[in-house]
Structures are given as C-alpha cells and as structure tokens.
Length: 127
Length: 107
Image: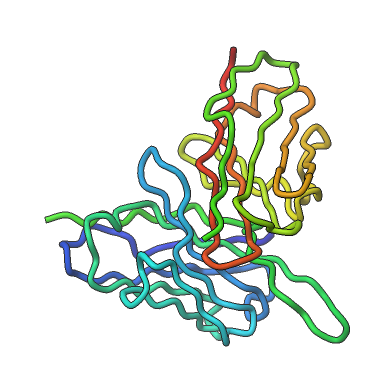
C-alpha cells in the first residue's frame, strides 16, 4: 500500500524555522515527483513546492521562494520541507503528495498532479 | 499564473441526483487537469487526472470532461459519501494552481 506520513509540524514564533518530513512507503520513492501543498483552516488548497522525480528540479511558489527548501533523502524514503523565516501567514496544514509518471520513448516524465496524499501536519506561526 | 475558477461555490443536491461541477482555466492547460475530493478533517483524494481518467478505485459515477479551457466533473447519482468539497488543479505550468473549490451539500 502506498503511504505518506508527515511529521514535524508544531508551534513556532514568527521568524523561526521548522523542518517537515514526509515518510514514504509502498512505491519507488526515488523516481516519483513529490509536492507539498498547504491549506489554511477553512480555506482552499495552495501549492507550496515540488521536486522532480529525478531530484534535479525544484520548484517553489512565489510566497515561499527564498525561505523554504524542498529536498529528499532516497536512502530514507523521506521528503523534507525546510521552512525558514516563518511568517504568521504560513500557518496551515501541510500535506505531502506523490506525483504521477508518464512514459515516452526511453524516458520517464513527471506529472505534478497528486495521486496520493499524506494526512497532513499542522504548522502554527504565532507569538 | 494560470487562474482556475470553479463554479458554483456551493451546489445543493438531493441524494440520487446528478451533480455537475465546473472549472475554467484562464489559459490552455491541455489535458493536465485533476479533480480532488476533500471531506472535513481529511486530506484530499484524487478522483480524476488527465481531465478524463478516473483514478484507481474511483467509482464509475464520477466522470470528467473537457472542452478547451472548460472542465466538468459529473457525479451521476450522488451518494451520501459524496457530499464534500471538490477542487480542480492544473499541472501544465508553474506555479501549480487550484480552483477555489465547490462544496456539494445535501439539499
């Protein structure tokens, strides 16, 4: 069974840092694109960051660029989101999600839709 | 940025009736469009990818269609477990963007 389990959320003061983790199992983690999506209480979904299946490409929403860093450790099957200079408006539930693949010729490409989601971890930025 | 606009914001439907949800993209997203369902207190769940393809395990009463930049999610006969919020998402260009959601509630 494909499973994603986030951890690392909590209460942090403005300007502080947190590192979120997402433990993956049930699929070949090292080959799939992965994303982070957040949701403010009672609001909609906002894409935060993504990393390509090869790990060579990283992508960020403008709202977090320069403050957040996405990475992966394929030896631990774990995705990370390092969040620095946190602001009150970063308060949200953070979800990690797995992408999909497509095949062309002898290659594999990434689709950045989210076909499996974790249960989410809550980040609260407040003084 | 590609803006995804969902309508209506709220849809009141009786069990057993058909529900039609719309999503419009501000520019072409090809078929790189997904639909998700989210119930209170739960993570979203993918229903449709590639605009038309049901995800694994999704019942056949859910179907997706597309016409240019207009996308539709149809639930043919609403079951009690289908009352939820539905989001569309484009994945053709950065940043990835979601629609604002449609809440399907019991009439």
